[in-house]
Image (cartoon, rainbow, N blue to C red):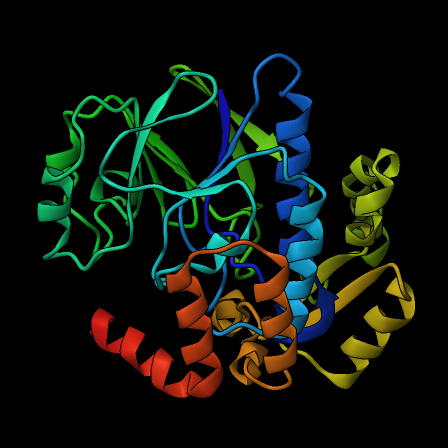
Length: 345
């Protein structure tokens, strides 16, 4: 038994157009670890992460601090991970977690006896060769690729044919929950745009897959002529799950997306009626939400980070490769990022 999740995209800010909405991805991370604790009475229930754990290879000291604070509360829960296209760097930032393990092509046995392997994100032409190197007897293969069979042949998706001999394939990258035979996509743990579904985790028990509620921030999408009172009433229903979970009550202040021809009069009406019960986001069309993704403030990653990261190196055991990587990052962060981008191009 283990908990599987993908595409946490850990960052401090969640919505670019709503900078006051913060730390949703961190709370999802904490929730996943809480769930692992709930199932760890007899056998340790690990957390398996299918890539894009972080939103960027660039790291702010503030974000790393908050992630480490959460991880330090749950060091008894082992974390197994692969790298996605957003955090494709080795050693990964996950290597700074205590009790963490990078999955590769060779088998790794979990505390419950399941045998799993992993493939970091690959370009489409590299992926088939990477599959050939994987131990064929693994119970679950963890990948970070958008598969054709899960995404309805989305342009750019990966051919799933080479994977059909595996008992189970848990895929990241595609931000929707989908199941097709032995293939499963968990979706992202948080909405990355208005049009995405609420995030979730998956409890994997043998061949059984059970979706897990991660307490996503409630959201309503309404037209400009919607009834404000009825909208708020529906909102109250969505907020109820947070009443018994004090640590997650910050998420109870949800988002109301008002779409259509937005006038000053419309804005004033909604702002007056909604008051402080929800964040308001005004868009002409839901497709406008493509711009609303995890905040891009991480581009200032190296700012003030040197002293903190050097301190991290002293406090947390890590490999010499990890230490060299951080030293390189501190001395020339832009050069390191460009090197990673060259590998992906």
